[in-house]
Image (cartoon, rainbow, N blue to C red; front, side):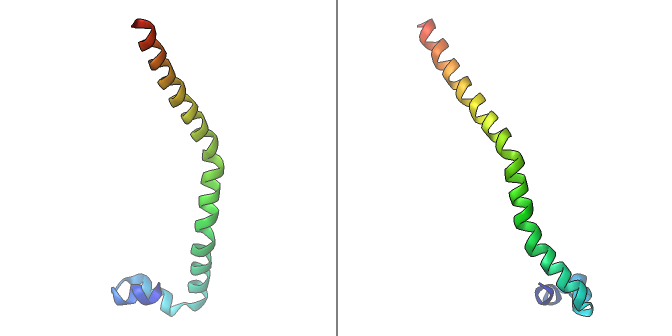
Length: 71
């Protein structure tokens, strides 16, 4: 990442090249934070997704039932 940033003349590349300890911490944080954040979002979002799916199914069934009753 530091190499790519330095090729693009990004200041992050210069900073990470000059600070190897911070560079290591940055890479470890990025590597570990991405799956942890994804797992946390999935864990907390699963209930809302299930509630949305149940609402969508009930709405579809209601529309079908009300259409059948009116005919």
